[in-house]
Image (tube, rainbow, N blue to C red):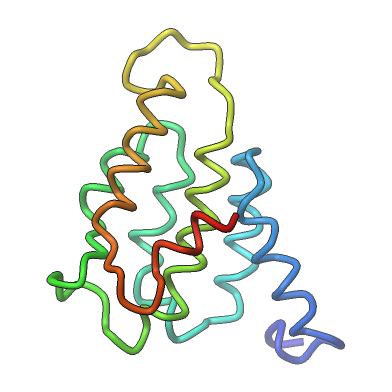
Length: 137
């Protein structure tokens, strides 16, 4: 088998992997992201280096500042936005729900993480209901 597209019911597997992205357990979400990246989706592959640090414990705030999804930014192609935003939303929703890791660091406290995620979503446009994905989760 050269890729997951050759597997039986590969679309169902992709849906399942995408649903695992919103899991609060970062290890499970990281494995799910690696499985989704194996599909080589044209709207996700160019942004893999921006999406993967969102699942690391220390790199979330830096990843959110480097990955600008606002409509004014030219980092994300307009044709990719419609499919990319739900995946990024699922990843960040899982991080939003995750508990603290026991460290007393103020940079990685659940409150600071949630504030960073909410400020990231405030930069999304109102076009096509991009912010609705987070609200409906």
